[in-house]
Structure formats: structure tokens, C-alpha cells
Image 1 (cartoon, rainbow, N blue to C red):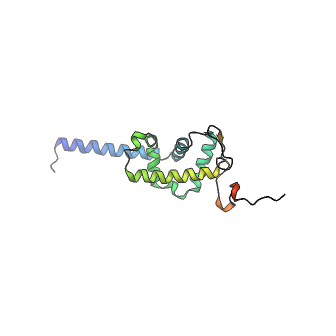
Image 2: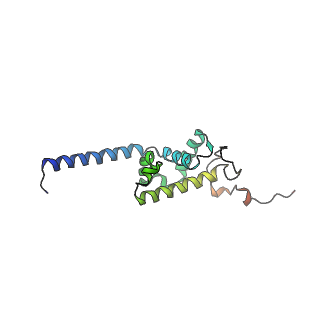
Length: 151
């Protein structure tokens, strides 16, 4: 390939775009809490969740989940502003959608087990309360798994 002015200019623009997108992803990746908040607000839109509960759950979930500090989640956090727009979500590569759905599933399951949504069967439109991060080593709090109290 001969280096003409046009090729040199196009290479420079491509390099600048690559560096800019990398910097954007790097800065946005610091907001993993925002990714978890976006997941909760998107998938549990029918219920009211207080901002304090979302922040508390986000920090507890990030401490609990081993894979939440990895580069894949960082990339998802960088893409979080466009992930929840149906038009842009369809444009993402299948691998990115697969990783997103896996991470969303883990976050939603952990939130369901850590809130009163299942145990009290909170109807849509009501407030969901975060009870603390679910730890299977402490035993299951789901009412159907508890022994029947004898009176």
C-alpha cells in the first residue's frame, strides 16, 4: 500500500476514533454501578425501587460477583447508555448480547433473592425493598422451603 495523503488522513482519523472510543469505554467502565442500576430499572420497571436500595444492592452485588470486575463487564458498562435502546441493541454483535444477557440474568436473580419481590409477592406498582445481599450459606429465606411451624 502506498501512503498517499488520502490514506494517511484516513489512517489518522481511524486511529483517533479508536483512541477516542477506547477512552470513552475506559471512563464509562468506571460506572459498573450504573450498569447494574440500568439493568434493575429496565427489567423491574413495573415496580418502584428506591435509589438508595439500588445503590446499596449495586455495591453489594459488585463485591459478591467474581466476574463483575472483568473486562467484559467493563465493556458492557461502557455500552450501557445505548444497550437499553431497542434499535441499538439489535445492532450489537451476538457475542456482546450473549454476555449482556448472562450478566443481566445473574444480576436479576441476585436481586430477586435479595429483595422482598418473591417472598412477599409484591404486586406491580408497589415498592420493592432490598433486604441485603442473598447468601446461600446462610440458608434460604423463601417461605416454601421453611419448616412448617407446629402450634
